[in-house]
Structures are given as structure tokens and as C-alpha cells.
Length: 447
Image (tube, one colour):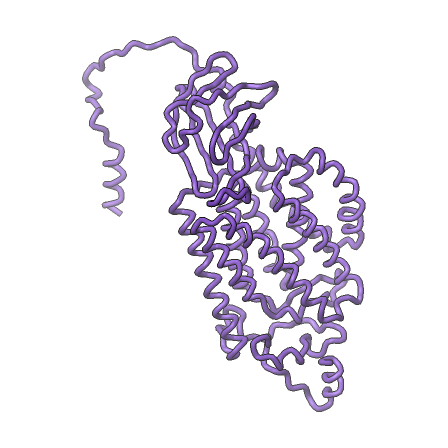
């Protein structure tokens, strides 16, 4: 502790300091007023299209500028494989601002940033992550953090309404989608193909979950498999982006996504429970799988859509906390909250992203460390799952090796299809041994 305090004290020393008892030489002061743009406060952001290692447009990029009264500006620039965080100088002549002195992002030097009407600023930035006539949005420094809390609360409320109100899905994801699709096509401003595909995949998923809850669909084995398959397909969509990006951290996280898919297990227990709200539950899903998924998913955003990272944190934290409160509902909470967020994103794109994202620091080292952690935990998860599948051995405290199906699903003996256990590599549990008086029921269910 003493060594730490000494280090901090020494860090505050400056060889240019003088004795306070000695008169200091007066330096001439200029009366030049600070640049007008610094008086506006806040910061200016723009989100652009990013590219992978081979130039494929699969990710995003963003710039953030914060102008100070001393004619210096804070510059952040993030795009896959390239990161900048530095202090630069600037000048302002009328409505034109010019940056100088950028070392990590030299493409902005000498570029005219033209103040437009309202709170916009236009600039054409060459090179990777740039573009013609990029429109910078002015925003408050503190608002993104307030917005994050509102997203967190809003997503939790949206899931609880979806859970309690049967007609929430038909109204919001039925009539609402039909009406809003015309608006999104013309006004959303979302250009990422990945996000368009994701939007309608999620809408279909929400509807599918609704049918599973309120129709006899849950009695079919293919339905239970399809719920898990939808989850796997969503992971694969992101894995493709990581592999296309091609940088080492992306490749590591893409591999982590594959391991996460291979660790999906116990899907035979999926179905509605017997409570009044008919929750769609996955009662045998391991808590470690959820944690590994969260880490992988946030890492995916961090590396490819960095401006989306703060939103990704909220989107993963909400269903995880809900699943700890209402056991087994993670897959329903994750699918619905993500879907509702995308409806919000496409309807108020600039407000959610340019004005609302929290800048998360990133560089080459942090990208590699985070991706390595994602790969490591998913490797451990996959090893534990397959050790259980093949040898029925696993640590109980991680929810492996436990019988955790708390709800009986109508038409399915013992909450699982014991016929699947004849394939050792696919068995979620050792083959069930029904009691003699239950044998006919078991045979019927297994068939």
C-alpha cells in the first residue's frame, strides 16, 4: 500500500514546478475567445460502415469528437482492426472546423468539418471506416448512460408484458410489424444487412415462442428441437460475421460461438409449464451455458459493432437476471427482449445509436484479451457438456449431472424423450428406468 501511495505521489510531481514563495514570471495572455463549436459542449458522433480484414463490409465503424475551449479535441475512432484514442488540435473559421495532429487516425487531418443546420456536422473522411458526407450528430455527454438504464428497464417491462398478456404478440409483432415495415424501409437509416436479417428472424422467433406457449405444438419433438435450432442459427449468423472479419480476435470469438452451439443441451425438456402464464421454459439449461453465451455475445458486439456493445450488455443482462428470478425462462426472455429492442432500434435508429450508445474503450490488446476469454470459457463449457453426454460425469455446482426438470410436460414421460438416450453422444441424461406400473405410459411417450 505504501509503495502504491508513493507511486501516485511521484506521478504527480513535475520537474517544471516552482516554489510557491517565489514570484512567477507573468506570461502574456491572449484575449482570443474560444472557438464557437467548443461553446456548444457535448460531443459529435457518427456511425459508418466498417470492413473486415479482406475489405468485406461486414462490420461497423464510428467516430467521436469532443471539442474543448483550448482548441484541442478528444478523438475516438473504432473500426475492426483499427483503433484510435488521442488528443488533436483544431481550428475554426466560420462554420468550418479543421483537425490537425492526429497520429492514430491521420485520415482526419485537414478534412473540413462543416457545421450544418440544427445539430449536425458534415465531413467526407477517406479510407477505412470513412465515407462521403458523413453526418455527425451532436449529443449530450451524460444522456447515453441515462438511456442505457431506460433500455434496461424497458426491456424487462416488455418481457413481463409479453409473458402476462396473451395478445401482446399479435398486436405488437403482427399488426405493428406490418405497419412499421413500410416506415423502416424508407426512414430507418439502418444499412447493415446483418441487422435486417436479424430483425425478421427475431420477429419469427417471437411468434414461434407464442405458438409453443398457447397451442399443442409443444407436444412434438421437432418443436423442441426447433427452439434450440433457432438459437443456434442466431449464433451462426454472428459467427459468420466474425469469420468474415478475419482478424485474430474475431476468429477466436467465432470459434467460441461454434463451441457454444456444440454445448447446447437438454432441449428435450423445452415446453410451457403448468403455471397460469404458461411460461416457455428450458428447465435443464445449465447456468454456465447462459454465462458463456453472454460473454461470447457481448464480445461479438465489442469486436464487430463496437457502438452496439453497451446495448448488448443490457440485452444479455436482462434475460440472465430474469432467468435467475424465474428459473428456466432464459430462452424466451432472450428471444423476446432482443426482438423488441430491434423494433425500437429500427423505429428510432439515430436516437438509439448515434445519440444513445455508450463509448466502450478498445484497442488491439483489449480485443485479443476479451476474445481469448470468450474462447476459453466456451471451451471449458463444451468440454464439461460433452464429458456429461458421453460419460455422465460433471460438476453438480455448474448444473451438470443433475436432474433439473421441475415441470412435467404433458404427453412426455418424465419430462424427456427417453428414446433419444439410445444415442450416447446425444443423451441429456442416462436412460430412464420407469417403474413397472408406468412402463406402458413410458413406452408410449418414448415412441
